[in-house]
Length: 96
Length: 140
Image (cartoon, rainbow over all chains, first blue to last red; front, side, top):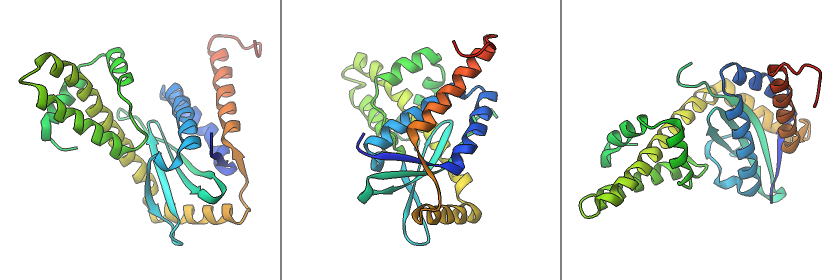
């Protein structure tokens, strides 16, 4: 793992709710598996994960990746070799 | 993805796979973590099916199944990105992200290692499984 992957503590608290929500829709295993996969990929090659979805007002690119049922947004700080995960969402299944 | 190269037919084929068969086929493909990569992979496999169909029908049959799951994977991934974009494309969501990055860059926001998050997720799931199994006595 060449990159340090960090998580906004504010959204860490929200993660429990999202996990419980995923469980209620039978997505809990997929939810955990998606996180595990994203952690490995972000730690090795964050620029290869997802796409730049938009730029902040200061020009900083915000990346997004969707691996159902999880979507995350993150910023990459190359000089520090750090990935900041700023937002997490649970994606509804097509049948919901 | 377009309807070029018989993508529609491939998606229909994929819809008929059992989850087990789908999983077996997906394991044979090196999907990336990027939607354009995976869409290109699906398109390339679909073109390969067409290229060999007449001369090597047996090879085409193997490739067709792989192309079908690749097309289906790309379709599901596209759908997931569309859902994610809906959540993050509002002016409110963008403003919130702007503010959040500013808090992080100023050191105001607390960041925690992802490893810690994964550990907690595993622990939550373990406890849940124990409760579901009737093991409410605590950790094993």
